[in-house]
Amino acid sequence: MTALSDRRAAGVFVLGVIAVTAGVLMHLPMFLVARDMGYRLNGMGMGPEMVWGMVLIVAGVAVAAYGLLPRNVAAQVAASRTIVVSPPEDAPLSAAHWRLMLVLVLALVIDVMKPSSLGFTIPGMIDEYRLGRQVVSLVPLFALLGTATGSVLWGMIADVYGRKASILLSAVVFVGTSICGAMPSLAWNVGMCFLMGLGAGGMLPVTYALLAEMMPSKHRGWSLVLVGGLGSVGGYFAASGLAATLVPAYSWRVLWLVNLPTGLALVALGGLIPESAKFLLARGRNREAQRIMATFGSEARTPGEAVKAQTVRGGSDPLTGFALFAKLFALSMAAACYGLINFGLLLWLPADLLAKGYSIELSSRLLAESALIALPTILFAAWGYSRWSSKRSVLVALAVTIVGLLLVLRLEIAGRGSPVIPVALLIIGTNALIAMLLPYAAESFPFRIRGRATGVVAACSKGGGVLAQVFAVLALVPAMGAVSLALLIPAVTALVLVTLFGREIRGRDLRDLDVDGHTFHAAGI
Picture 1 (cartoon, one colour):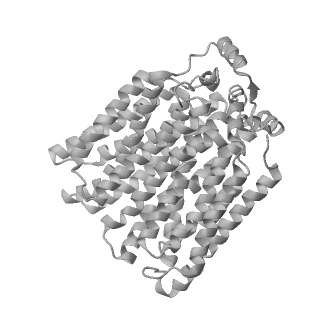
Picture 2 (cartoon, rainbow, N blue to C red):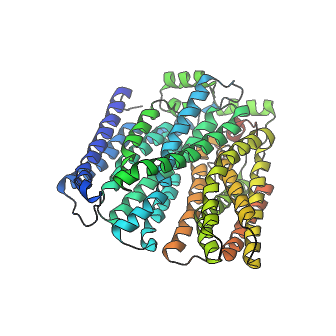
Picture 3 (cartoon, one colour):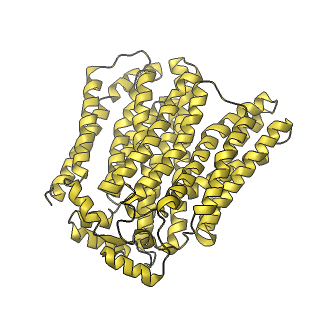
């Protein structure tokens, strides 16, 4: 295969990172000049150094991508169809697995911190731009649109070009979009936040896909749920901590500018993330692939050998045809429900309670408790998912969410009663659901479409948030009773479809999903 040597490819990638970093640094003088004005840039013009900085960023991302991606995609795809790399189903949990989990938790904390910062920037934007909340809500709307798009886009990149390359490219985009903190107008903030979301949206599904392929089956379930959950909770607390520490001194803009050091840290962490052995073998990098397989206990076989091994194990047939799409549809609907509840109903509910005469202390406490409940919920979900039943744990999370929606509907109809139990059930149900949903998707689909399928589910979780923000921008927030009733339809549908088409994957051998290497090619996937 004709390709740049590894050293040259690494050099090209580093050159791209340097160019992106230089482009970001060219934006900082404008931010620093506004120190005496409380770092307020509204109404200021963009100097030529900022324009050239943007050119450097765009060129740097392109150069970094060139250094990361394979030169002969057709040959790589063709080779991948003749190789089956077995996940380390029977390997013991080694130091390499623990190191990978730690690195991916840190990577997800950095990743989740970006969209989690949105809520802490909105008040500052409203004050600086002197615009209403409806207009400023365009920023989280386009950021969530970016994350939804990025989840699908980066899933495709991961399936064709490799897991590690997609993570590193996402990190480079993080670095470039830190210039959002130096943009003088809301329009530029909206555009840059879309690009930020584009980079952030792909990290989570790719991380789950990589971890599912590396972890032994008896440890895979709890590790996926725990890594994703700790990354999400850690990202929120990191964002809130930075907001409390830095915003009073440097304004809301600093929450975007910290993307520069954190993005570079993510690039550095990328060096500790292993590439998929199947991807390396397809590119002819056999020595590297053998080293990865030896470290994580994997092995490479032909499709015929995989079929024979699956027969000997007595594994179940892989999910195909209508059942595959029904399961993907069910998980996507469940993810959309999470987005609508988390970014819609739970955010609108405090204002609705205030309008009904409840105290502001109660409303504020409900939001604060969401963060406190999240961590124990994730730990319990990890235990149930790995020790009890993966399918039943997902169904229980959906059922708890449905009960919470019914109680909110009852509260609205009765017009009285305590909202604590309904909101607590929604928080517990949705936190457990999102903690398990992407791991369940990553463990349910074959290697060739694992990144894309998980990306679609992740995109739907953001898509629900996008729809909620559209209602906020248009000032069309419906009554909570109507919201609860509307959400019951997809939630119950998801519960029924997962019951019918969901499979128990606790301890299941992922090799059973790829017995011939071509199972899903005929479906055009």
